[in-house]
Length: 390
Image (cartoon, rainbow, N blue to C red; front, side, top):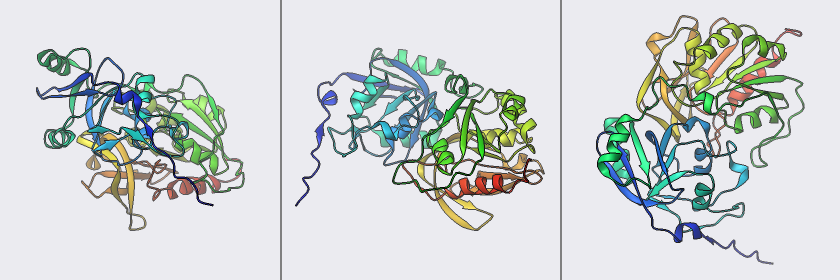
């Protein structure tokens, strides 16, 4: 018996509108296109992501708070939207920029179209602009502040607003995306990624600065009990939960203003094994005395090569960050373990005296790649290697 092919669905929300929209940069450049999201006006740092898939994960990644994300892949929306691929409850980015919004979507898991999803969640989005020209401008001149609007279409007004917008440097954006209370996580990875792992009995406490949901999925799928706490939680409160391991999550923006988090991490180093990802990596490094700097246009995509200096292996990684750690500023207590092969920036460190390590990229990457899953195993091994009762 032959299976009938999945029939594509028309993206009716997109087909029923041709309302204008504009994107203005602080350098005076203005791009005119059509609205494929909600009506409104938003500001943010205009950045780009080189992924060909995973647009729903990008939309719902809290690390994009304060950013207007441009997709370099020319067509977005062709496989629709579904609840399972979310990295958070709702989209967290400021705005969305694409070349072409697919007029149909086709996937057996799809529950709706991209345009209707953007409108439902109030995401201002623009299509039918020259994203190649925009990305080349960002690569040449660096990420810039911008305004995306469907309500104000006056070029001079938009440029002035872009110049006056706050940007990312010096802002604490984690307070806008971290949870308000302690939560227990009990969701495993999906059927394509998960494997049957016996219950480890270990308790991992995650400091959530804007954590992607696939991280606790990985931790829980390895048989751990997972508790999520706000990133503002004190060291005493964390240790009172009796963790066997402590995880430092990703999150948005500049790590420098997060002084309370850095002090908390300083107090936790040496108490329990620590693993940090992205912002968590930066905060661990700063807590040990390193310094951060802003990258020209950041690393955002699913094809970033990283060298593991401990094994000599190269892995393809997903990354999403606009700041990095200055290698020259690393204190003696930190050792570089991973390097980004595109620009030789630090992509991972570990503590020489205590059981703490971190990476600048995303080993939990969903939709992929999966080269870096081993880092969760390293964390699990560090937890298991602790003396009983420690």
